[in-house]
Image 1 (cartoon, rainbow over the protein chains, first blue to last red):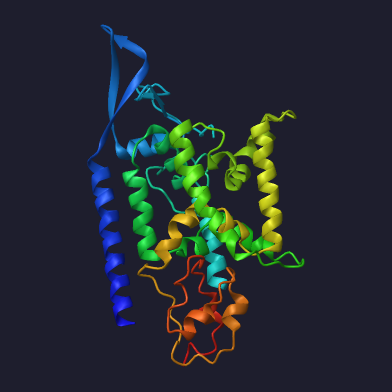
Image 2 (tube, rainbow over the protein chains, first blue to last red):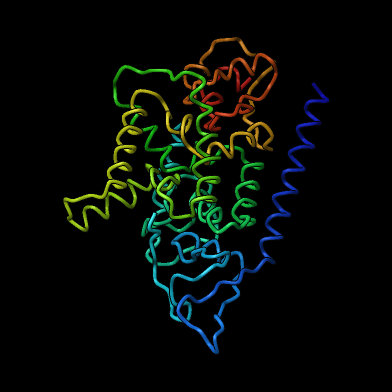
Length: 87
Length: 256
């Protein structure tokens, strides 16, 4: 019984550490999101956004994936109002 | 039980009180659609579906749910989730009550793996076969208000399917307590294993249980807390326990 209890505590502590590690990794991660409409000198322009911003974009389909690249579905240079996810 | 009801009502109001600001970088581990105009936080399922479509690993979204899950288990399901609250209220409608077969509680893991991760990964985040397309919380918070505001009588097939799922779920929970949580909820599927490990414990007097079975009678998840108490295990160490604490509230031995 004691052994089961200790095993549970150890696994719980491991999951806690993994959760904190995921949060730490996410907080320093960035993503390249391309503008779908604009090109300069034949090159696509892109924004570099952090993971928090990507989570927000995921709540209203602010990013779409095409050909292994992420494209913005809205103009990031303009202030964004409340948006609803089409799903 | 009154404390839980008050907490559920406050959660329902506070989670849907945003007049404009948003904190949608935070994934609240309850079933509440982030497309609702009043919502503050993100739904983790919607975020996972989009991340699967983007072929990205959801570090922040998964880390948040794991952190809250390992600390609190499924406490959010029993005390905060607005859809859980709706199910509790609907179940009070006096009808014949049924118990679902035990195998149905495994379906939510299939829903999680297929409709949240695999299908969006292969078919894209906008696929018609993701969980968001049938989510009953989304149907209530977003689809129905959109139908009323658009005043259109012609509904797309996808909307009709979503509304049908909502009707079936709402009818189901009238007859079987928290049926959606047990059978379909993908957030519940993620949090369920964490219930077995979480730091949160529902303390019951396991040494002087008198086997009155009052805890079994009140359990909303019908998971027989008495069977765990008899083995000296805390009552919330069950995959489907929503950590409501009703077993502790009714226990005649807890004060001794």
